[in-house]
Amino acid sequence: MSTAGIDGAIRGQDPEGARHHCLDALDAGTPWLEIARVAALAYGESADVSPEFPPHGLIALSAAVRLARHLPTKVQPLPVVEAVVVAARDRKLGGDMRRKSLKISGEISHLSHSFEYAVRAGAFDDAVSIYAGLLHEGKERAMAGDALFRVAAEDMVVGGHKLVFAVAAWRLAGALGWKAAGLVMAPAVAFVASGIRDPAAFKAFMAVLGREKMDLEAVAGNAMPADEAERTALRTAMRAPSPDACAQGVVASLGRGVTLDNIASLAVEEASARIDATGLYDLPAVHGLIFADAARWVLKFSKTYTRIYPAVQACLLLQSLRREGGSPPIAPGGDEFSLLDGILRAMESRKAQEASGLVRAYRAKGFPPLPLITLLGYEACRDVPASEHNLELACAVADEVLVHRPPVPEGMAALSRMLALSPRDRGAWPTLEKRFPLTFS
Image (tube, rainbow, N blue to C red):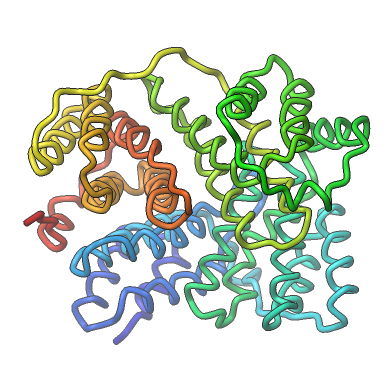
């Protein structure tokens, strides 16, 4: 089960070679998760991480591994193969600058404080080594996750990339069994530790908290579901004319006892609506939904009050994005398989409004979500690497429908619209489609 070719293609920035070697490895019987592991380690050691080169290959690998688990067995390797192509395309360090698996040991609280200091100082080499020392077992590993997500949520540079990459790295390391986790996560940790560059939204939130004298420990335990009035108030906050007004609206809901998950799930709904009302491939809006999904995941992971930060930042991020009115109507109905076929044809014909309307019709009929998620996840692999964000968006939508509870299914229509409008690159697709055919019985 040779995977040396995959390692070399990633380090040598050879996307086509990476795809070829992945297919050869699959032919030799290599499990797709092992291919992902080899790719993640090669990428972790060689990726050039700087403000202008965020580690997209890492988030693609993380999304692919998670999306694969929702797909039929014969199709599962497909997103992983295409994520490896993304990882190979990203810029790499020179041979004498390869990242090593260095680890600084010490007492957990001291390491945590040192890590946060290194992040805020922009000392990314130190931050990577310190963080590798934080990744122990059990409770201590959870503390390491909290430290990373806390500092990542403070900086909303490039639409919240830092938190998205941090969450993706953590989930990828977990999916790979935490073996060499420090190296797997190193590109994301280094990116988070590139200095605080866009703290404006976080400062707006903290200023409102200061004025309201709110006890974060108390509101982190809120248990009141959001009724329709609260949902309307939160939507109004996310559509407010300024970050300060948005922060005030969200903090007011927190003060009235609304649960954090209600806030985060409503942010996912709002982000989906933004996408589903656009007539173009809206990358900032796509980032908004991916960020809101990451924030919702942090709520499930963390037990500390700092899990509030990503949820509120999701609302502030949506406030900063443009909004278009209206939403597509529900298209005429049909049986389950005719609707799936219609959705596929509409996406392939770039009829974004029709695709979205048919998805709404599928949902209105009460058909099971998994076949639709399977179709959308498969389609998200067609245009990689030209549209690697489709892979990430498909994974976020699948998680919102199949993993998080209660589910937020609105993202499926938004995803179909983006797949219809996205940039295309079909050079390798005939080979991949033949190798990984998708059929519905």
